[in-house]
Amino acid sequence: MPAVPASRWLQLIIGIACMVTIANLQYGWTLFVHPINEKYGWGRPAIQVAFTVLVLAETWLVPFEGWFVDRFGPKIVVLFGGVFVAAGWVMNSAADSLFLLYVGAALGGIGTGCVFGTCIGNAVRWFPDRRGLATGLTAAGFGMGSVFTLIPIQNMIRSSGYEATFLWFGLGQGVVVCVLALGLRPPAPGAVPAAARLGPQVCDYSPAETVRSPLFWLLYVMFVLVAAGGLAATAQLAPIARDFKVADVPVSLLGITLPALTFALAIDRVMNGITRPFTGWVSDHLGRETTMFIAFALEAIGIVALSVYGHDPLAFVLLGGLVFFAWGEIASLFPSTCTDCFGTKYATTNAGLLYTAKGTASLLVPVLSFIAVETGHWHLVFMITAAMNAIAAVLAIAVLRPMRVALRRTQKGAAAI
Image (tube, rainbow, N blue to C red):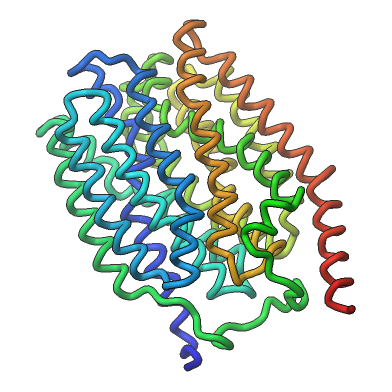
């Protein structure tokens, strides 16, 4: 039965709400690193392995979760995700060893992946005519969702300890996700408009066909290059602020005065969220590759500037916002490009396969942390991540664009036979 006009917008709103609810698992993590290290003295690199485990579980299992979504619908997968989201932070609240901390991270990552991959896949299906915008709005919930709970989490850690914060926020987040999951459903055949700007979709690539495409692996490499720096900033922002000696320095901006770290975390989450629908919308009109080039080049410039000027508290806040603005768009541009190229029938699985690049990039987070510890500063880390973004920017224009044109030409030729 065709959906009423409001149906797909309701699906989009539910997806965004789910993303907001799970955002803390990744973007709130940095607030817990210092308290955990103060209690157990495990060292930041060892604790940050938990962040890598979280992202690996979040990303590398998404293709399998997407397989279930493509066959059984989004509701059941997101329900399971809510259970794992709660279990992950409850485990973290009781973890008295690195092993248990890693287990909690794995559980939370599985839950995050179930929700993230499903909601992105649902958005690209419901909005083929506004794919970049819809994907960006959905991903924005994940990028900026933690801004609403940032200060409450900080306050609860100070007043009740990080253990209680993990416990009660984990349970609350899990329950909300499970309730929201009940409203999710895929579009019925013929219930959504065609993607007229792109022309008729001439073929749907199965996951096996997708991973045999050189274009897929180019997207994968670009995703890794860009994601590594953003993940490092997400996991290490609080340690960087402390090493730069700006974490607790008051900063006044727009009539608001907060410690530099708190201000940076809030602005970073907002900018990380805003960029996703904005760049998705821009890419719908300007083109995916051009938008990628601009964003990735801006990210490289922002990282270099943060390295040079970040010791000033106000510059730390503003440049951190720029870095997160230029990084967050990967959550809208890459899934949209993947679906443009390989079709909608297996959209969740194919986008999930590409999303594993984020997990691959997370393997670099403890490595970058180790480099910072060994060198005694963050300069080399910043230069490495800036160079990776610059390379991705060049690849978008010089390699991705002609490969996409060639693929489209091949698809149209096959359809004409």
